[in-house]
Length: 191
Ligand SMILES: Cc1cn([C@H]2C[C@H](O)[C@@H](COP(=O)(O)OP(=O)(O)OP(=O)(O)O)O2)c(=O)[nH]c1=O
Image 1 (cartoon, rainbow, N blue to C red):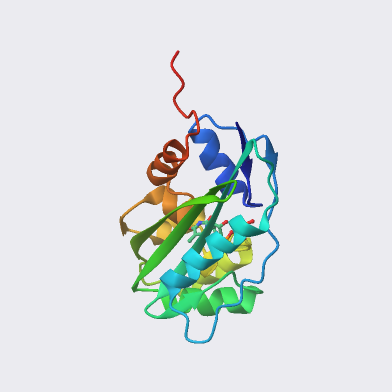
Image 2 (image 1 turned 45 degrees about the vertical axis):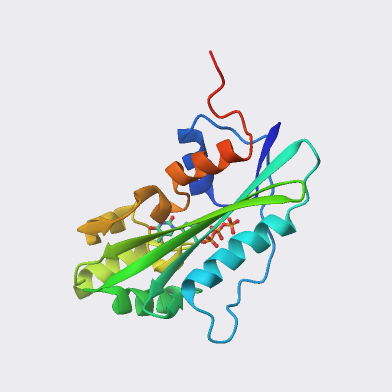
């Protein structure tokens, strides 16, 4: 059975590699990520992972893995900032507060789908103006939900998380391994 990564995220490819998995193909999804009116962060994130899975074409001998990572500040969804101004706006909102990072994973094999979502609490310290300016100028926030990456320089802004570090980075490894095993993927073949 072949594993297809339905994601253009380099983080997800690296996290899969941590499990010793190299996808046979990478097919980034092309879906509309606009939240619905009054949609809450967790259902939004679950919906997107599922829509990504449904959007990726796959053959009978392939299993496709997709995910979505959403930053939630209360009921508000913080997506990927479109420019420096929005990155600074998001970081100003997150500064000195706790938020949640949700990552939903979907695995599809033929018509069957396996899904999990993981919610992690994250505390960001209060950011000074120089800290915020330097981080925004670094461009590290590009393509990242909420406008930061815990695995990069913004790790210095996060004194505490409650939950899964790999989920915050983009793919919860414990849950993903469980899904792969449930779907019959030979993750730990006998030596
Ligand atoms: C909060 C946070 C997010 N992120 C990243 C993970 C995801 O790649 C991205 C959220 O966007 P996603 O829409 O989940 O994924 P993507 O657009 O990068 O890739 P694809 O849709 O093709 O699967 O934010 C980090 O790398 N570190 C972090 O600390």
